[in-house]
Length: 173
Image 1 (tube, helix red, strand yellow):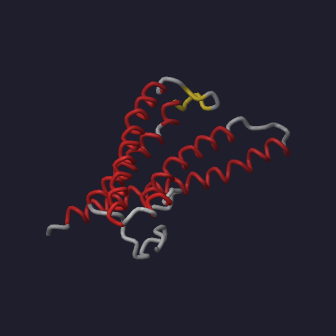
Image 2: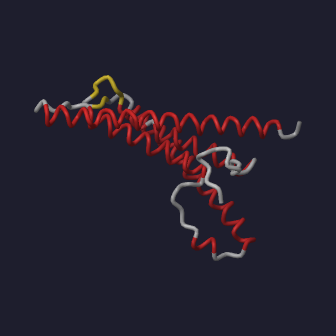
C-alpha cells in the first residue's frame, strides 16, 4: 500500500500532538490548583508558601512552548497573512513553502541551542526546588522545537492534518 507510511507518520504526529495537549491540560489544572493554595497560605495563614509561584511559572513556560508547537500544527497560532493574501495564488504557494522552511530553521535552532542550554544548566538546581535541575526547566525549548520540526516535516511531506471536523482542535475554514 503506497500511503501506508504516510498513514503511520500521520498517526505518529497525532500522537505527538495529543501527548502535548494532554501534558498542557494537566499542567494547567496543576497551575489552577496551586495558585489558590498560594493565596490561601499568604492571606489566610499569614505564612506564604515559597514553592507555588515558581512552580506555576515553570509550568506556564512548559505550557507556552508545548502549546505553541500544537497551535503551529493546527494553524491556530497568531500569524500575519496580509502580505501573502495580496500575492497572486502561484506566489502564495511559494510563500507558504518558504514559510515552512523558515519555521523548520527556527525549530532546528530551538532544538540545537535548547539542548545546549539544557546541558549547560543541568548541574545547577532551582533555589525553591533543590532536587530539580535548571536544565529540566529549559527542556520545553528543545522539546517544542522537535515537535515543531516534526510538524514542519509533516506539512512538507504528507500535507497538513485533515480539516474535516473530526478533530475538535482543527478549525474549519
